Length: 228
Ligand SMILES: Nc1ncnc2c1ncn2[C@@H]1O[C@H](COP(=O)(O)OP(=O)(O)O)[C@@H](O)[C@H]1O
Ligand SMILES: [Mg+2]
Image (cartoon, rainbow, N blue to C red; front, top):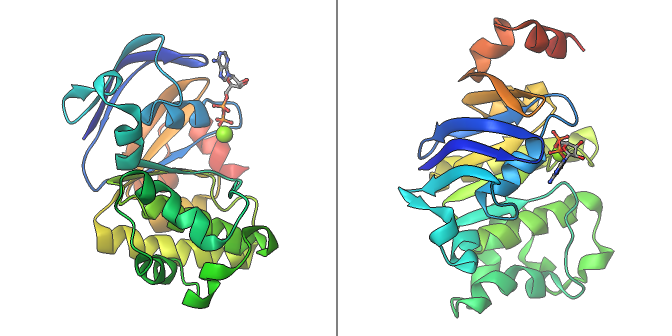
């Protein structure tokens, strides 16, 4: 689905790898390794200084950027909701494409385990966990094919993080989504992922089945990372 060929940008050095449809990729590694920078290349929040990125064989630079970001959804650590109601937030993306009907809200809120009465709530009044659910629903409203997540639960307490994981686990399965998720929670990586990419200093130094990587690391760097 995605193919990176010799991509460099900022801290990232000459990265080449592919991501297949329906893969659940966990991107992890020390702080400052370049994980967020890499994630933002998928939807053109960054553009490579060298190399190419292909989505289904076509250079992402040739896509219309709004259309690209509809297909490639992003959820950040901070929910950054717009001022207004929950409905205002979740209808925003589809409205741009004339694809919104108010009855869609109920289904979207169900995906993230929120009652449909939440449509009229003021986004600013929600708890951190609720905001992150709405943020996820807002991204899902665009019917993305690939979901990028940058540490979506690391600002939340343990219990709330688990509830978001529950939502994600079901969603990814039901919608056959492709996922690339940055996490530093290895239990979360094991639970939600099937493939791991371990990054250090702007390079992917291990790439494999997540369960095997975590039980049998091939590099000292990963062994040390797991210990910490
Ligand atoms: N365009 C850029 N040019 C140079 N350095 C950058 C650029 N973008 C980010 N960096 C630096 O690269 C490092 C990795 O950033 P980041 O991707 O946020 O790491 P991570 O998400 O793994 O913690 C940081 O030190 C950041 O300051
Ligand atoms: Mg980061």
